[in-house]
Image (cartoon, rainbow, N blue to C red; front, side):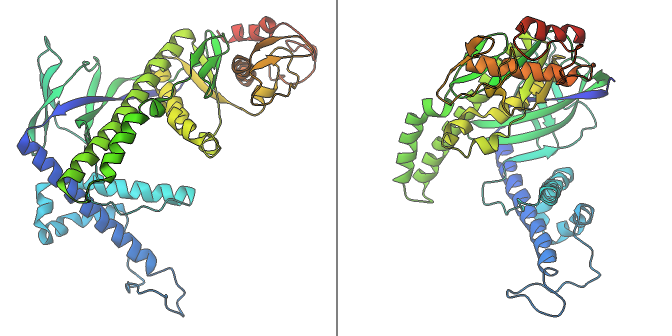
Length: 424
Protein backbone atom coordinates (compact mmCIF):
# COMPACT_ATOMS: atom_id res chain seq x y z
CA UNK A 1 0.00 0.00 0.00
CA UNK A 2 1.27 3.45 -0.90
CA UNK A 3 1.03 6.24 1.65
CA UNK A 4 1.09 9.82 0.43
CA UNK A 5 2.16 12.87 2.38
CA UNK A 6 3.32 16.39 1.73
CA UNK A 7 7.09 16.56 2.07
CA UNK A 8 8.43 19.00 4.68
CA UNK A 9 12.11 19.90 4.61
CA UNK A 10 14.22 22.03 6.94
CA UNK A 11 16.91 24.18 5.35
CA UNK A 12 19.38 25.97 7.65
CA UNK A 13 20.92 29.26 6.48
CA UNK A 14 23.33 31.72 8.06
CA UNK A 15 21.79 35.14 8.72
CA UNK A 16 23.49 38.44 9.52
CA UNK A 17 21.27 40.73 11.64
CA UNK A 18 22.47 44.26 12.30
CA UNK A 19 23.12 45.71 15.77
CA UNK A 20 19.49 46.78 16.32
CA UNK A 21 18.13 43.40 15.25
CA UNK A 22 20.63 41.52 17.43
CA UNK A 23 19.61 43.59 20.43
CA UNK A 24 15.92 42.91 19.76
CA UNK A 25 16.49 39.18 19.32
CA UNK A 26 18.44 38.95 22.58
CA UNK A 27 15.68 40.85 24.39
CA UNK A 28 13.03 38.56 22.92
CA UNK A 29 14.95 35.45 23.96
CA UNK A 30 15.14 36.70 27.54
CA UNK A 31 11.42 37.62 27.59
CA UNK A 32 10.51 34.19 26.19
CA UNK A 33 12.68 32.55 28.84
CA UNK A 34 10.87 34.40 31.62
CA UNK A 35 7.42 33.64 30.18
CA UNK A 36 8.40 29.97 29.83
CA UNK A 37 9.49 29.83 33.48
CA UNK A 38 6.35 31.67 34.61
CA UNK A 39 4.10 29.19 32.79
CA UNK A 40 6.09 26.29 34.24
CA UNK A 41 5.69 27.78 37.73
CA UNK A 42 1.90 27.82 37.28
CA UNK A 43 2.04 24.19 36.22
CA UNK A 44 4.17 23.16 39.21
CA UNK A 45 2.00 25.11 41.66
CA UNK A 46 -1.12 23.37 40.38
CA UNK A 47 0.53 19.95 40.71
CA UNK A 48 1.93 20.79 44.15
CA UNK A 49 -1.49 21.82 45.46
CA UNK A 50 -2.89 18.40 44.54
CA UNK A 51 -0.09 16.01 45.39
CA UNK A 52 -1.10 15.46 49.05
CA UNK A 53 -4.20 13.86 50.49
CA UNK A 54 -7.19 15.99 51.51
CA UNK A 55 -6.87 15.09 55.21
CA UNK A 56 -3.23 16.18 55.68
CA UNK A 57 -0.84 18.91 54.65
CA UNK A 58 2.35 18.79 52.67
CA UNK A 59 5.70 19.00 54.44
CA UNK A 60 6.56 21.99 52.27
CA UNK A 61 4.48 25.09 51.73
CA UNK A 62 2.17 24.92 48.73
CA UNK A 63 -0.24 27.40 47.19
CA UNK A 64 -3.89 26.77 48.02
CA UNK A 65 -5.68 26.52 44.67
CA UNK A 66 -9.46 25.96 44.62
CA UNK A 67 -10.65 22.49 43.71
CA UNK A 68 -12.65 23.76 40.73
CA UNK A 69 -9.66 25.62 39.25
CA UNK A 70 -8.92 24.08 35.82
CA UNK A 71 -5.59 22.58 34.88
CA UNK A 72 -3.32 25.28 33.34
CA UNK A 73 -3.20 23.73 29.90
CA UNK A 74 -1.89 25.22 26.69
CA UNK A 75 -5.11 26.92 25.61
CA UNK A 76 -5.72 28.44 29.03
CA UNK A 77 -2.20 29.86 29.34
CA UNK A 78 -2.30 31.07 25.75
CA UNK A 79 -5.60 32.89 26.41
CA UNK A 80 -4.03 34.53 29.47
CA UNK A 81 -1.33 36.21 27.37
CA UNK A 82 -3.43 39.33 26.44
CA UNK A 83 -4.16 40.08 30.11
CA UNK A 84 -0.53 39.35 31.02
CA UNK A 85 0.62 42.02 28.55
CA UNK A 86 -1.25 44.64 30.60
CA UNK A 87 0.66 43.64 33.72
CA UNK A 88 4.00 43.09 31.98
CA UNK A 89 4.26 45.64 29.11
CA UNK A 90 7.58 44.14 27.86
CA UNK A 91 5.57 41.21 26.46
CA UNK A 92 4.13 43.57 23.83
CA UNK A 93 7.52 43.93 22.15
CA UNK A 94 7.54 40.23 21.18
CA UNK A 95 5.32 39.05 18.30
CA UNK A 96 2.23 37.38 19.70
CA UNK A 97 2.68 34.16 17.76
CA UNK A 98 6.26 33.81 19.04
CA UNK A 99 4.93 33.93 22.62
CA UNK A 100 2.24 31.38 21.78
CA UNK A 101 4.70 28.92 20.28
CA UNK A 102 6.92 29.42 23.33
CA UNK A 103 4.05 28.26 25.57
CA UNK A 104 3.40 25.39 23.19
CA UNK A 105 7.02 24.28 23.60
CA UNK A 106 6.45 23.93 27.35
CA UNK A 107 3.34 21.80 26.91
CA UNK A 108 4.99 19.61 24.31
CA UNK A 109 7.67 18.87 26.92
CA UNK A 110 4.92 18.22 29.49
CA UNK A 111 3.07 15.83 27.14
CA UNK A 112 6.33 14.02 26.45
CA UNK A 113 6.89 13.67 30.21
CA UNK A 114 3.39 12.22 30.68
CA UNK A 115 3.96 9.78 27.82
CA UNK A 116 7.29 8.30 28.97
CA UNK A 117 6.98 8.87 32.74
CA UNK A 118 10.20 10.80 33.39
CA UNK A 119 11.91 14.02 32.32
CA UNK A 120 9.84 16.71 34.06
CA UNK A 121 10.29 20.12 32.36
CA UNK A 122 12.94 22.30 33.98
CA UNK A 123 13.34 26.01 34.47
CA UNK A 124 15.59 27.65 31.91
CA UNK A 125 18.55 29.59 33.27
CA UNK A 126 19.82 32.84 31.86
CA UNK A 127 21.06 32.30 28.30
CA UNK A 128 19.52 28.84 27.87
CA UNK A 129 16.73 30.01 25.56
CA UNK A 130 18.34 29.74 22.13
CA UNK A 131 15.55 29.84 19.55
CA UNK A 132 12.45 31.75 18.44
CA UNK A 133 9.78 30.34 16.15
CA UNK A 134 7.76 32.37 13.64
CA UNK A 135 5.00 29.86 12.78
CA UNK A 136 3.31 31.41 9.73
CA UNK A 137 3.49 34.18 7.15
CA UNK A 138 0.93 35.92 5.00
CA UNK A 139 3.35 36.15 2.08
CA UNK A 140 6.73 34.78 1.09
CA UNK A 141 9.23 36.19 3.64
CA UNK A 142 12.23 35.74 1.35
CA UNK A 143 13.08 38.55 -1.03
CA UNK A 144 15.94 38.21 -3.47
CA UNK A 145 17.03 38.02 -7.07
CA UNK A 146 16.51 34.94 -9.19
CA UNK A 147 19.80 35.63 -10.96
CA UNK A 148 21.73 35.63 -7.69
CA UNK A 149 19.72 33.40 -5.31
CA UNK A 150 22.45 33.44 -2.65
CA UNK A 151 21.97 37.18 -2.15
CA UNK A 152 18.73 37.94 -0.40
CA UNK A 153 16.86 38.96 2.72
CA UNK A 154 14.25 37.38 4.95
CA UNK A 155 11.48 39.57 6.34
CA UNK A 156 10.35 38.82 9.90
CA UNK A 157 7.67 40.57 12.00
CA UNK A 158 8.93 43.57 14.01
CA UNK A 159 12.48 42.88 12.79
CA UNK A 160 12.26 43.87 9.16
CA UNK A 161 14.67 42.60 6.52
CA UNK A 162 17.61 40.46 7.67
CA UNK A 163 20.51 39.57 5.40
CA UNK A 164 20.58 35.82 4.64
CA UNK A 165 23.12 33.64 2.88
CA UNK A 166 20.83 31.47 0.76
CA UNK A 167 23.61 29.08 -0.26
CA UNK A 168 21.10 26.71 -1.88
CA UNK A 169 17.88 27.87 -3.53
CA UNK A 170 14.49 26.71 -2.35
CA UNK A 171 13.22 24.01 -4.78
CA UNK A 172 10.33 24.70 -7.10
CA UNK A 173 6.95 23.60 -5.81
CA UNK A 174 7.84 24.36 -2.16
CA UNK A 175 6.49 27.17 -0.02
CA UNK A 176 7.91 28.58 3.21
CA UNK A 177 5.77 27.53 6.18
CA UNK A 178 7.73 28.73 9.22
CA UNK A 179 11.10 30.16 10.24
CA UNK A 180 13.02 29.38 13.42
CA UNK A 181 15.81 31.74 14.48
CA UNK A 182 18.70 30.03 16.27
CA UNK A 183 21.44 31.65 18.33
CA UNK A 184 24.70 29.71 18.24
CA UNK A 185 28.22 30.48 19.33
CA UNK A 186 29.28 30.91 15.70
CA UNK A 187 26.46 33.30 14.83
CA UNK A 188 22.76 33.46 14.02
CA UNK A 189 20.96 30.92 11.84
CA UNK A 190 17.52 30.62 10.28
CA UNK A 191 15.96 27.16 9.93
CA UNK A 192 13.34 27.51 7.19
CA UNK A 193 10.65 24.83 6.99
CA UNK A 194 9.41 24.38 3.44
CA UNK A 195 6.50 22.21 2.31
CA UNK A 196 5.58 20.85 -1.11
CA UNK A 197 2.15 21.49 -2.56
CA UNK A 198 1.96 17.99 -4.05
CA UNK A 199 1.52 14.61 -2.36
CA UNK A 200 4.66 12.47 -2.40
CA UNK A 201 4.47 8.69 -1.74
CA UNK A 202 6.57 7.11 0.97
CA UNK A 203 9.51 5.05 -0.32
CA UNK A 204 8.71 1.38 -0.89
CA UNK A 205 11.11 -1.61 -0.92
CA UNK A 206 12.61 -1.91 -4.39
CA UNK A 207 15.83 -2.41 -6.27
CA UNK A 208 19.11 -3.45 -4.69
CA UNK A 209 19.04 -4.25 -0.95
CA UNK A 210 21.92 -3.85 1.49
CA UNK A 211 22.37 -4.32 5.21
CA UNK A 212 24.19 -1.70 7.26
CA UNK A 213 26.13 -2.44 10.45
CA UNK A 214 27.59 0.41 12.54
CA UNK A 215 30.48 0.19 14.96
CA UNK A 216 33.42 1.97 16.51
CA UNK A 217 36.33 0.22 14.76
CA UNK A 218 34.72 0.85 11.37
CA UNK A 219 32.00 3.49 11.37
CA UNK A 220 29.77 1.39 9.14
CA UNK A 221 29.98 -1.69 6.94
CA UNK A 222 27.56 -2.82 4.23
CA UNK A 223 26.63 -6.28 3.06
CA UNK A 224 28.29 -5.54 -0.30
CA UNK A 225 31.70 -5.24 1.33
CA UNK A 226 31.98 -1.47 1.65
CA UNK A 227 33.65 -0.42 4.91
CA UNK A 228 33.78 3.18 6.14
CA UNK A 229 36.74 3.78 8.50
CA UNK A 230 35.99 4.82 12.06
CA UNK A 231 35.85 8.53 12.84
CA UNK A 232 36.53 10.14 16.22
CA UNK A 233 35.26 13.69 15.92
CA UNK A 234 35.55 14.70 19.55
CA UNK A 235 38.88 12.98 20.20
CA UNK A 236 40.47 14.58 17.12
CA UNK A 237 39.68 18.11 18.29
CA UNK A 238 39.89 17.39 22.01
CA UNK A 239 43.43 18.75 22.36
CA UNK A 240 42.30 22.24 21.32
CA UNK A 241 39.14 22.03 23.44
CA UNK A 242 41.21 20.96 26.45
CA UNK A 243 43.35 24.10 26.17
CA UNK A 244 40.27 26.35 25.96
CA UNK A 245 38.62 24.67 28.94
CA UNK A 246 41.81 25.02 30.97
CA UNK A 247 41.90 28.76 30.22
CA UNK A 248 38.24 29.04 31.19
CA UNK A 249 38.89 27.41 34.57
CA UNK A 250 41.46 30.12 35.41
CA UNK A 251 39.06 33.01 34.80
CA UNK A 252 36.99 34.67 37.49
CA UNK A 253 33.35 33.72 37.14
CA UNK A 254 30.90 36.34 35.86
CA UNK A 255 33.75 38.51 34.62
CA UNK A 256 34.12 39.75 31.05
CA UNK A 257 37.18 37.57 30.42
CA UNK A 258 35.27 34.56 31.72
CA UNK A 259 32.45 35.25 29.25
CA UNK A 260 34.92 35.58 26.38
CA UNK A 261 36.57 32.27 27.27
CA UNK A 262 33.18 30.58 27.69
CA UNK A 263 32.14 31.66 24.20
CA UNK A 264 35.33 30.16 22.75
CA UNK A 265 34.58 26.82 24.43
CA UNK A 266 31.01 26.94 23.14
CA UNK A 267 32.23 27.75 19.63
CA UNK A 268 34.56 24.74 19.67
CA UNK A 269 31.72 22.45 20.75
CA UNK A 270 29.63 23.89 17.89
CA UNK A 271 32.46 23.25 15.47
CA UNK A 272 32.71 19.60 16.55
CA UNK A 273 28.95 19.16 16.15
CA UNK A 274 29.00 20.79 12.69
CA UNK A 275 31.87 18.57 11.51
CA UNK A 276 30.08 15.45 12.75
CA UNK A 277 26.75 16.29 11.14
CA UNK A 278 28.36 17.31 7.84
CA UNK A 279 30.21 13.97 7.71
CA UNK A 280 27.03 12.01 8.47
CA UNK A 281 25.06 13.76 5.73
CA UNK A 282 27.78 13.02 3.16
CA UNK A 283 27.91 9.38 4.28
CA UNK A 284 24.11 9.05 4.11
CA UNK A 285 24.09 10.30 0.51
CA UNK A 286 26.91 7.90 -0.35
CA UNK A 287 24.93 4.95 1.04
CA UNK A 288 21.80 6.03 -0.85
CA UNK A 289 23.89 5.99 -4.04
CA UNK A 290 24.78 2.34 -3.36
CA UNK A 291 21.31 0.87 -2.86
CA UNK A 292 17.56 1.40 -3.14
CA UNK A 293 16.69 -0.43 0.11
CA UNK A 294 18.74 -0.19 3.32
CA UNK A 295 18.25 -2.30 6.45
CA UNK A 296 19.55 -1.01 9.80
CA UNK A 297 19.75 -2.61 13.22
CA UNK A 298 17.13 -1.50 15.76
CA UNK A 299 19.62 -1.23 18.61
CA UNK A 300 19.06 1.29 21.42
CA UNK A 301 22.29 3.27 21.35
CA UNK A 302 21.51 4.86 24.72
CA UNK A 303 22.16 1.50 26.38
CA UNK A 304 25.28 1.05 24.29
CA UNK A 305 26.53 4.45 25.51
CA UNK A 306 26.45 3.29 29.13
CA UNK A 307 29.22 0.73 28.59
CA UNK A 308 32.96 1.09 28.95
CA UNK A 309 33.09 2.60 25.43
CA UNK A 310 30.37 5.12 26.23
CA UNK A 311 32.44 8.22 25.44
CA UNK A 312 33.37 6.92 21.99
CA UNK A 313 29.78 5.80 21.33
CA UNK A 314 28.41 9.24 22.15
CA UNK A 315 31.11 10.81 19.97
CA UNK A 316 30.11 8.59 17.02
CA UNK A 317 26.45 9.66 17.45
CA UNK A 318 24.90 6.61 15.80
CA UNK A 319 21.36 7.65 16.75
CA UNK A 320 21.72 10.96 14.93
CA UNK A 321 23.18 9.15 11.92
CA UNK A 322 20.15 6.84 11.81
CA UNK A 323 17.81 9.84 11.81
CA UNK A 324 19.82 11.53 9.07
CA UNK A 325 19.80 8.38 6.95
CA UNK A 326 16.01 8.11 7.27
CA UNK A 327 15.66 11.78 6.30
CA UNK A 328 17.97 11.49 3.27
CA UNK A 329 16.38 8.20 2.22
CA UNK A 330 12.91 9.74 2.23
CA UNK A 331 14.11 12.60 0.06
CA UNK A 332 15.85 10.29 -2.42
CA UNK A 333 13.18 7.55 -2.57
CA UNK A 334 15.37 5.03 -0.73
CA UNK A 335 13.52 2.67 1.62
CA UNK A 336 15.15 2.54 5.07
CA UNK A 337 13.91 0.01 7.64
CA UNK A 338 15.07 -1.36 10.99
CA UNK A 339 15.38 -5.07 11.72
CA UNK A 340 16.10 -7.13 14.82
CA UNK A 341 19.76 -6.76 15.81
CA UNK A 342 19.98 -9.62 18.33
CA UNK A 343 22.55 -12.21 17.38
CA UNK A 344 23.56 -10.69 14.05
CA UNK A 345 27.26 -10.87 14.90
CA UNK A 346 26.92 -14.48 16.13
CA UNK A 347 25.12 -15.86 13.05
CA UNK A 348 26.64 -17.03 9.81
CA UNK A 349 24.95 -15.11 6.96
CA UNK A 350 25.56 -18.00 4.55
CA UNK A 351 24.28 -21.08 6.36
CA UNK A 352 22.51 -19.31 9.29
CA UNK A 353 24.07 -21.38 12.06
CA UNK A 354 25.31 -19.85 15.30
CA UNK A 355 29.03 -19.05 15.33
CA UNK A 356 30.11 -17.69 18.69
CA UNK A 357 32.69 -14.89 18.62
CA UNK A 358 34.31 -12.69 21.22
CA UNK A 359 34.67 -8.95 20.86
CA UNK A 360 38.32 -9.23 19.82
CA UNK A 361 37.48 -11.71 17.02
CA UNK A 362 37.28 -9.50 13.94
CA UNK A 363 36.91 -12.22 11.27
CA UNK A 364 33.86 -14.43 10.81
CA UNK A 365 34.84 -18.02 10.01
CA UNK A 366 32.05 -20.58 9.78
CA UNK A 367 33.10 -24.17 10.65
CA UNK A 368 30.19 -25.68 8.68
CA UNK A 369 30.12 -23.87 5.34
CA UNK A 370 33.71 -22.51 5.59
CA UNK A 371 32.49 -18.99 4.81
CA UNK A 372 35.02 -16.35 5.87
CA UNK A 373 34.54 -12.60 5.82
CA UNK A 374 35.10 -9.56 8.01
CA UNK A 375 32.97 -9.63 11.14
CA UNK A 376 31.22 -6.31 10.45
CA UNK A 377 30.44 -7.29 6.85
CA UNK A 378 29.01 -10.61 8.06
CA UNK A 379 26.74 -8.75 10.49
CA UNK A 380 25.60 -6.45 7.68
CA UNK A 381 24.84 -9.46 5.47
CA UNK A 382 22.79 -11.02 8.25
CA UNK A 383 20.87 -7.75 8.64
CA UNK A 384 20.17 -7.84 4.90
CA UNK A 385 18.93 -11.43 5.23
CA UNK A 386 16.57 -10.51 8.03
CA UNK A 387 15.32 -7.48 6.13
CA UNK A 388 14.48 -9.62 3.12
CA UNK A 389 12.72 -12.10 5.40
CA UNK A 390 10.68 -9.30 6.95
CA UNK A 391 9.55 -8.00 3.56
CA UNK A 392 9.10 -11.34 1.81
CA UNK A 393 5.57 -12.22 0.71
CA UNK A 394 6.10 -15.98 1.05
CA UNK A 395 5.31 -15.89 4.76
CA UNK A 396 7.31 -19.08 5.25
CA UNK A 397 10.72 -17.76 6.24
CA UNK A 398 12.37 -19.43 9.20
CA UNK A 399 10.65 -22.79 8.53
CA UNK A 400 12.54 -25.79 7.18
CA UNK A 401 10.24 -26.69 4.32
CA UNK A 402 10.86 -27.48 0.70
CA UNK A 403 9.71 -24.18 -0.76
CA UNK A 404 12.21 -22.17 1.26
CA UNK A 405 15.20 -20.71 -0.52
CA UNK A 406 17.51 -23.10 1.30
CA UNK A 407 17.28 -25.81 3.90
CA UNK A 408 19.42 -26.02 7.01
CA UNK A 409 23.08 -26.50 6.26
CA UNK A 410 25.47 -24.81 3.88
CA UNK A 411 24.22 -23.07 0.78
CA UNK A 412 25.41 -20.26 -1.43
CA UNK A 413 24.92 -16.71 -0.18
CA UNK A 414 23.96 -15.58 -3.68
CA UNK A 415 20.96 -17.93 -3.61
CA UNK A 416 19.82 -16.54 -0.30
CA UNK A 417 20.11 -12.95 -1.38
CA UNK A 418 18.53 -13.80 -4.72
CA UNK A 419 15.18 -13.53 -3.02
CA UNK A 420 15.64 -9.78 -3.13
CA UNK A 421 14.91 -9.87 -6.85
CA UNK A 422 11.26 -10.45 -6.04
CA UNK A 423 11.18 -7.02 -4.37
CA UNK A 424 12.39 -5.17 -7.44
